[in-house]
Amino acid sequence: MTKARDFFGLVFSKPWVRALSALVFVALLGIIFNAEGTFFKWSTHRDMLRQVSVYGMLACGMTLVIITSGIDLSVGSVLGLSAVLFSIATLHLAWPAWLAIAVTLLAGIACGTLSGAMIARFRMQPFVATLAMMVFARGAAKYLSGGQKVSTAVAQADGTYKYVDLPRIFSLIDHRILGDNIAVVALIFLGCVLLCWLLLAKLRWGRYLYATGGNEEAARLSGIPTGAVKLLAYGLSGMFCALAGICQAVQEQQGDPEAGTSYELTAIAMVVIGGTSLSGGRGGILFTLLGVVTIGYLEKILSINAVGEASRLMLTGIIIVAAVLFQKTKKA
Image (cartoon, rainbow, N blue to C red):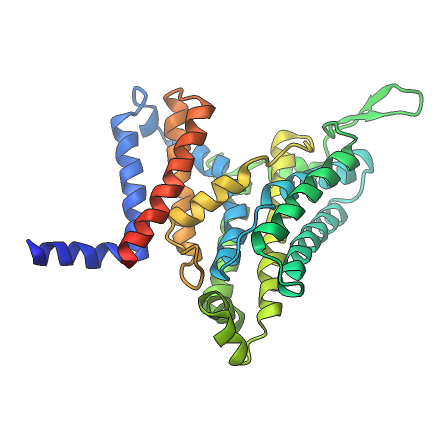
C-alpha cells in the first residue's frame, strides 16, 4: 500500500500529469452529461476552440508573468481598451487595417510595459501595480468611447447617425478555413502559444524568466537583468491583451468599453490548472494550453447543459482554489 501511494505521489507530482488529469476528468464529465449527444458533435469541439481563443491569448501573457512570480490583474481591462481603440480606428476613422492593428498593439504593449516599470523600477507589488492599470485602462476605454459601444453607427455633427460598412479586416479575422472547421481566431491563439513556447524553450530570455521567478535575488547576482525581464513579461502580456481585444472587437463587430470584465479570473484559472506555479519559476506554455482546453471544455459542458453564468463563475473560483491546494499538497 505504501509503495502504491508513493508511486501515485511521484506520478502526480509532475505538472503535465496533473494538467492532463484535469482535462481527462472534464472530458469524462462531458461524456456523462452530454446534453443528448451534443458533446459528441464535431461542431461542439470546433466552437469550443473558437470561443476560448480570446481567453487563451490572455492566458499566454499571464503565463509569462506568473513564471516571473508576478500577476497581471489588468488583462481584461487592457483587452477592453484595445477593443475600443481598434474599433474607433477602423470603424470611425477608417484607418488602414495595418495601421489600426499596429497602434492597438503598441497601446497594449505600452500598458503592459508601464505595469512592468512600476514593478521593476519602483518596487511596487504586482498586485497593486496591475490593479492600478486595471482601473486606468478601463477608465481610458470609457473615456475614448464616451461610455458607449463603438459600432458601425457613427455620430454626425448634426446629431444624426451614419452607418458604415464593416472593414474587410473584420471578415478576415472572423473567418473559418478548411471547410468552416478552423477559426482564424483559433489560429491566432495557437500562434501566440508558439511564440511563447519559442521564448520559453529556445531563447536565453526564456531562461531569464524562469530564473527571475525562481529566485530574483540570485538571478540578479548572477548578472541577469531582472528589471528588463519583468518589462519583457508584462510588455508581452500587454501585447497579447491587445491581440485578444482586436479579436474580441471583430467577433462582436463593435468595441465595448466593458469588454473583458472578469476575464483575468479565467486567464489565471487556465494558467493554474495547467500547472504553472503561482510562486514562480516553474511551468510552461504547453501546460497552459492544457489548462485553456480544460476550461474551454468545462465552459462548453456547462453551456450545453444550460447551467447559469452565476454557477459557472462560482465553479471557476472553486477550481482555482482546488488547483492551488493540489499544487501545495504535491510539494509537501
